Image 1 (tube, rainbow, N blue to C red):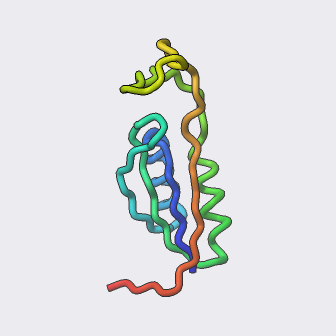
Image 2: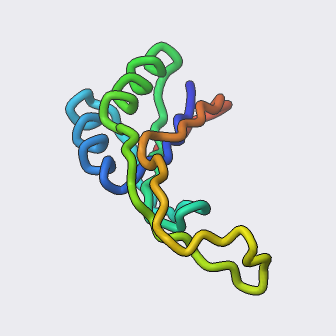
Image 3: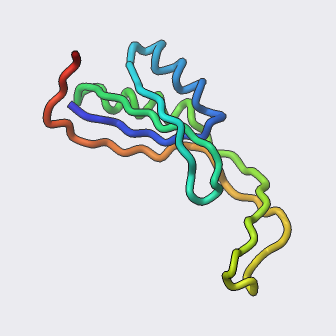
Length: 109
């Protein structure tokens, strides 16, 4: 058995959740916050059998697309302002960061 932990952008969360339900996979959704952009995202925890891991990864890949987004950089607080860029910059956001972990034991009560 494996535990798949997928961190996805909030914009992709509902689409991924619906796709997992359509394919009969159960998941727990947690609200989380990214460190780089300090933006909201959703962390999915999905327990599944080893033979289903590639199917779940395909569902995640199909429903979590990366995109370009303009963001206003956060000004440095007490840091070095020499490299601070005061205008919005384009960064790539979205997609998914996925961890696949072994599960030694699983209980459901």
